[in-house]
Amino acid sequence: MRLFLTFICGLFWIESWSTTSAIADSSHELKVTEIRTWEHPDYTRLVLELTSEVRPDIFLISNPYRVVLDLPPAEFLVPMEPRKGVGVIKNYRFGLFEPGISRLVIDLTGPAIVKKSFILPPTEQKPHRFVLDLRATTKEEFLATATGSQIKRNSAPEATENTDITNQENHSHSLTIVLDAGHGGVDPGAIGKNGFYEKTVALAAPKELGQMLQVIGPYKVVLTRNTDIYLPLRQRVAVARRVKGDLFISI
Image 1 (cartoon, one colour):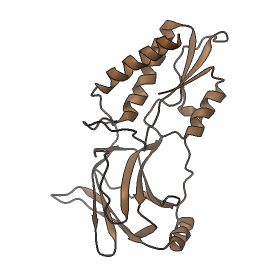
Image 2 (tube, one colour; image 1 turned 90 degrees about the vertical axis):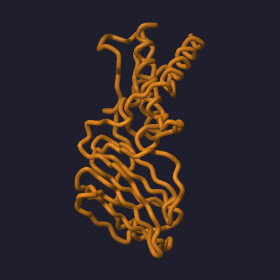
Image 3 (cartoon, helix red, strand yellow; image 1 turned 180 degrees about the vertical axis):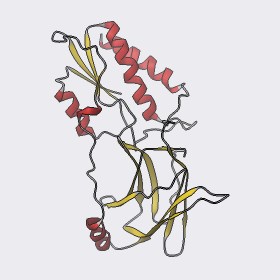
Image 4 (cartoon, helix red, strand yellow; image 1 turned 60 degrees about the vertical axis):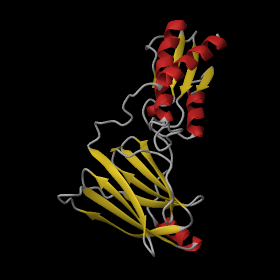
């Protein structure tokens, strides 16, 4: 049985990488169409081009130094690929953090704080824009600012995100298999040469595998996540323990 499970997982992994399914949810009203950065003598600027006016919630996180922007659910029409650092911005990543919140995380080269942020209305040539200026600072000022900034609980949602894909029958004599879709949300995993995200495959694979397991035997199958959302490792393990899983498969 172990060899068979390994075999079907391998077949589906290969097949999934060849798919061209949409990565983002086109139902989102807000779309981030462009992210631009450039360096000025005394600050670094990041600009979000948006389809509607939005003022993100901004807060700072240390160890390592980061600036976080929380937005309403958004579709990012921007390639998530390695970027060359600009000024105090080392890199940035984005995705759905939890239901109702999309998140942009800016990795910093060192301590930096928000010099100013503002909104620019659309023009004939440009859409709505949100502008964020960051300036380098000391560790002490960063920590003081971070303490006073808006701090959001950096955790994943509780069990409501987990999905039991079996029928509502008595499974007292069946094995419970927990399928864990790796990466997700702000963590895209590896990025293929055509811009295909590993997190997309990691989510599609357990959904398909779960259906296959229903045919193979009397298994109760639970997914740790069923949408493009970030789950910390501790939360994934907690799901398996909560449903008393007999087998945990991370994909």
